[in-house]
Image (tube, rainbow, N blue to C red):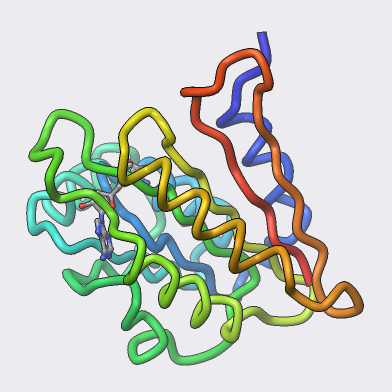
Length: 182
Ligand SMILES: C[S@@+](CC[C@H](N)C(=O)[O-])C[C@H]1O[C@@H](n2cnc3c(N)ncnc32)[C@H](O)[C@@H]1O
């Protein structure tokens, strides 16, 4: 069966330019940070954000155990402030929304900050860049977050952006994602 993660990564990959900048806007346990770190390579830099110190600890361990290149900046900062920390344009950014698996579910991403973070991430996109936004509609905030994101992305100018959505139509509570390309 189709792996959502593999599909997401295969869509991001053509936008990755080794030696440049990328961002993981929701670090969590560091899986996406590690993947970006490997793709962007030792000359590049991955900026990773989370509001929970435990996410930084888990990610730091994950990167060390995996022998990742020393090219990540882990920041305990909300993603809606990311543009204050990333010193240039990004070729790729990932938002894997929701809460940290196995931790406090109330510390989930919230519509207001998520929308602001996406707005600012769009402004950080380099030419031929992408943003991938994974939504988890199986919980109420996730469902509302997805609807709000779609309302925000649908009017983006066609000449400048292509915005796609991938959703399983026979599994309404399953995660789905948006891909923004410019
Ligand atoms: C589904 S997890 C991310 C999984 C992660 N990408 C991975 O590879 O393991 C969502 C994460 O978003 C974080 N988060 C919630 N609000 C945030 C915010 N305002 N800014 C940055 N991260 C936030 C949560 O703490 C949680 O760790």
